Every structure is written in structure tokens, then in C-alpha cells.
Length: 219
Image (tube, rainbow, N blue to C red; front, side):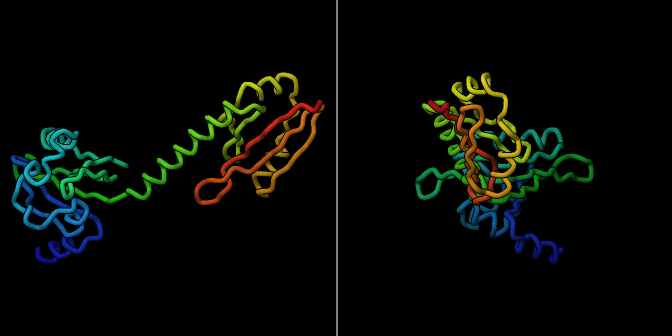
């Protein structure tokens, strides 16, 4: 048994065990204490005693549902508000809740495993913000614009000016899109009096994720 306790205490992910009847903290490892920004003195206290801020969040209800049904629960990118030094902070976690049964097959405790994914979620939110800004730019642009995403060149964003050009011209080529996407080099071509400019679109890591096309009718 000592071997398993050592594994629990030294695990690189946050772990805890909550007693089912009262949600009392029966076990907690250092990684969980660090994640929650709490001291070891919380051991033996109830969830809403050492984390009263979660009372208005969905987690007590989720825990009680696991206890009531005996079904595990997991969530990715969950947002949790924690109080630290009288300030409410936001963390993002992937977590799982696994029921522990007694000899009568009743839930006697819940095993909690959590991983801090704040960096991943902030990156995702940043990408979403960038995509919203890109959409706003395309839709309000005074020129014809479209955004193609991925190697299949699905149209992600297109403004009305580009749609009007496409109604007049059906020769927007796949070859140009492939050239720009795979080589990462901008390209310009004239088709039936319309000048199309192709520019590679890169993600936060610098990898090409699509192609931005701008179209202009020549006078």
C-alpha cells in the first residue's frame, strides 16, 4: 500500500480523493495543492470549506452526479475560478472524476485527476481571436477577398466583392492555391482582366494553414 501512496504523492499530475458523503478531502498530492494554490492543511476538510468559490460553479453538482449515478465524468479545457490572496483567478484544466466503490457496490469516494492546460487554452483563445479579427477584416475589406483553409482549400471566409467576381469569372485556379500553400511564396496572376494575389496564411507556430486571395478588376 505504501508503494501506491508514494506513486500518488509523486505523480506529475494533480490527484485527489474526495469522500462521497460529505466531499471531504481524504487524499491530495503536492501537484494538486500546487494547482489549487492551497496548503496541505486543507486535508480532511470539505470541498466548500477549502474552495468556497466553487459553490456557484458547476463542479459540486457534477461531483454529486458522479456519486449518484456511479458514472465517471471527464472534461477538457474546463474553466475554473479559484480564489488566491483575495483575488479570483482563472485556470483551465483537463480533468476526470472516477467513482470508487465499496464492497456493496456503492460509491464511497471520487478519484480526481487534473492537468493544468492554461497555456494550451490561452493559445486556442488567441487563435480564435485572430480568426475573428481576420473575418472582420475580410468582410469589411474594400477589395474582393477570400480565405481558403487546409490542404483541401475549403472556403472559410469570403466577402461579397469576391462572390461578385466569381460570378463573372470561374477560372480561380487550384494550381495557384497549391503552389502558394506548399511553397509558402506569394503569387500573382491575371485571369480575364482580374488580378488575383495569393498570400500564404500562417498559424501561431508559423506553419502554413491556408491561403488568402485578393482579387482586383483591372481598369
